[in-house]
Length: 145
Image 1 (cartoon, rainbow, N blue to C red):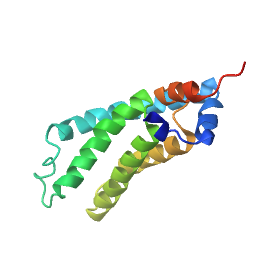
Image 2 (cartoon, helix red, strand yellow):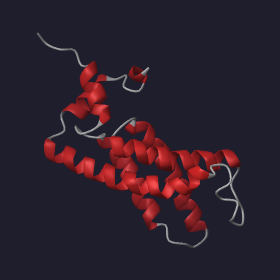
Image 3 (spheres, helix red, strand yellow):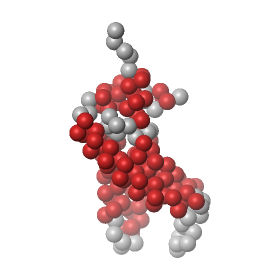
Image 4 (cartoon, helix red, strand yellow):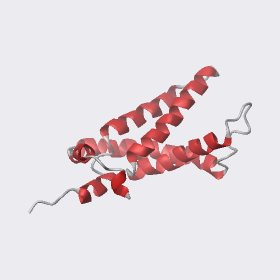
């Protein structure tokens, strides 16, 4: 089943050629930002269909669920470096909505924009060598000899 998430050899090559320094930096970004998302999403995942109901105009329940899952589950995935592209897509989409929502209310959008940028960075660069994604990719590589 996991082969579906790692279908192209280009992704495996991208993960494998990261140096230790870059992989360490990606690990730091993933763990710190992922931990923030897990803690931020924890309250939302407790009531995933109604966490926005306290505001003036709540989003439909399915969108509240998707945001809660992307923040909590995506954050956990970033910490582990597991299913990183999928986590980046979920977090990125959630942050696009967050940026537009905060801008339309005249509030500060900078933090959401930073998280969106991190999602794009991890989507483009991959999780690095120190990740579960890399372990899976290494097992899929054919051995020479």
